[in-house]
Length: 210
Image (cartoon, rainbow, N blue to C red; front, side, top):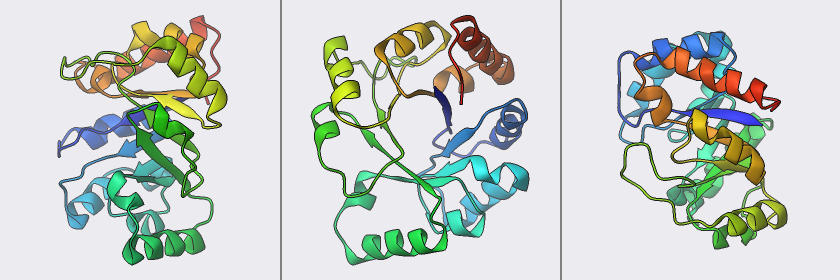
């Protein structure tokens, strides 16, 4: 199972320090998702993280930075997937420049998981799987539908929304490819300790973490 950390949506001075500590303790994938920030601000965030960990970052906007900083991959939003010459050219140039970039996207409906993708994605997020920890979103999925999508869609699906240490056993039972951490880390007084609790729970359940 893969473990993905989603960034906060806004700028926070302590975030890069926390992420660096998590990288040092085994975190393999950090999704840098800050839609309101400029290219300059995104560069500042990436450069605040040691270069040795840049290959673990998936960027959600300003995709051109994936080439500049040798990042792990790019995430395609609905806007990116709209048909346009600009988006087509971005996909082509990214592919030529770095063919091993991983590509991800998000779904909020089970039915769209069965669509034929325009791009071959390494994994996709499905949300919200559980009621969000902040109370802002409620899950609308049934377990049978989730299991069917995991087994029949042909996609590697990552559980997003309401994920914390108490949900790991259910995520594994449903057959998800991975889980996305967000509020459970950022709302914790000790983010590293919370992350290590999650890793320890995976070991307790004999879940191999990639």
